[in-house]
Amino acid sequence: MTNALELDGLRMHFGPVRAVDGVSLTIPRGGVTALVGESGSGKSTVGRCVVRLLKPTGGVVRIGGVDVTRLSRRELRPHRAEVSIVFQDPAGSLDPRMLVGDVVAEPLRLAGGSRLSRRARQQRVSEALAEVGLRDEVARRYPHELSGGQRQRVSIARALISSPALLIADEPTSALDVSVQASVLNLLADLQRDIGFACLFITHNLAAVEYLADQIAVMYLGKLMETGSREQIFARPAHPYTQALLAAAPVADPVRQRAQQKVLLGDDMPSALDPPSGCVFRTRCPLAFEKCALEVPPPVRIGDGEAACHLVQADGTRPDVRTGAHG
Ligand SMILES: Nc1ncnc2c1ncn2[C@@H]1O[C@H](COP(=O)(O)OP(=O)(O)OP(=O)(O)O)[C@@H](O)[C@H]1O
Ligand SMILES: [Mg+2]
Image (tube, rainbow, N blue to C red):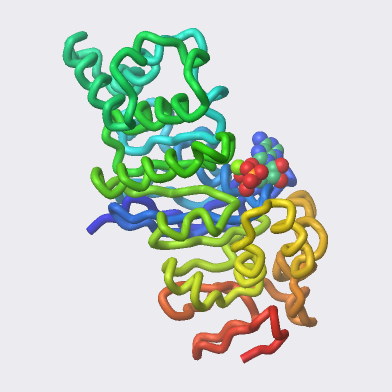
């Protein structure tokens, strides 16, 4: 069976800035993978490469088994409908001059849906709005007349109207009021379960994906530190970075969470302009030793996932940042 998405050594360098530096990841059909990491780790850049808002500088992107990495804009057109993206900020990603109905219908038009009659298109728009819990009359409003939560529902309706096999959701709730974040997250989870599209869910908040993702990929400074099933990542994280993120995760208060993380991780992430030699995480890793500055750790198979750390071994040996023990 073909996978919904395969990334093979994906690279996106902006001149000297190594925003994404060799990311390999597979999402099976209907699977939900969370891409987690601190601000600036390269998560959105991965998403933008997948939907080809950016043309990768290296590696391969396969969607539904088809290598789309080096297709031209015209060659991409027949594949347009297979992947959609929902952005963080619904105000900025919806055209303010277009009626909501036209915003939602646009992907149908772009995919050659002009062959659909006006009536059929309106019908599809009503269905799409109903699926995200919005009434029909919203179609005749402008985006600015809606609340933030309603606008994000519109973005979701728009993203799903072309029945994509893969949805990229880039921090879809983090610009919303805390009071509506959960309802939009639940909506996405319900739609995913009902429709069965695959999803790359991008977030900086590991705790938020516990009930959504079946696979988790932890990113740091352009590279994947660890991947694995949700069960494994939460119960037996192997990489020191994942462990540090989890040790800080269960706190509801973001200020306290940052403070907790600081105890384990110290300063902010170094710049992607000048990443550390060897393991990029070593300058903040409480367990770093000589080898970490000299050699890039290759991903090692552990349990049902992989971790890129010199202290992780295929026999199951893994470090523990809280005790400082290795083994
Ligand atoms: N067009 C660009 N030109 C130059 N550098 C860029 C560009 N886009 C992103 N970057 C850099 O690439 C790195 C990764 O950025 P990216 O937006 O992918 O991170 P992110 O993980 O999505 O962060 P956040 O959680 O803040 O959204 C950052 O150092 C950023 O400054
Ligand atoms: Mg981002």
